Length: 88
Image 1: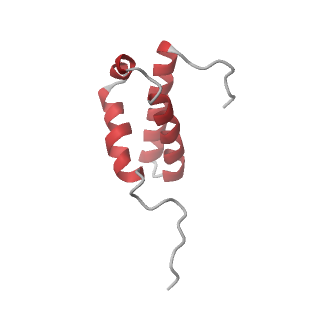
Image 2 (image 1 turned 180 degrees about the horizontal axis):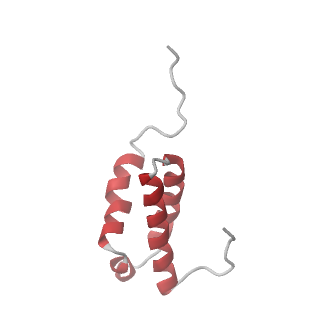
Image 3 (image 1 turned 90 degrees about the vertical axis):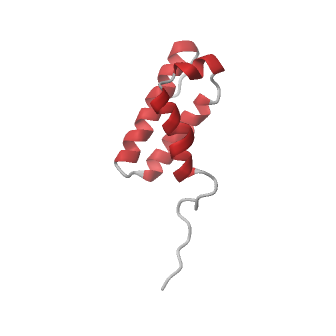
């Protein structure tokens, strides 16, 4: 996807956050964890730029998945991806 010259604002920003969360969830459902992790990071970065009022406009189901459920699996307390494995 091409980079935009102007940063998103207002409704366009809210729409993009929702889109990225939905894409991350679709990767999650497809068991594509690496892609899900990357898309979740992008969605979270955009989500953190929203004001409190804008965050309320994101559907609750998407907010919960982004902040809580996915944190359980992708949080800093988890083993990072591509960790070296012990050979038997």
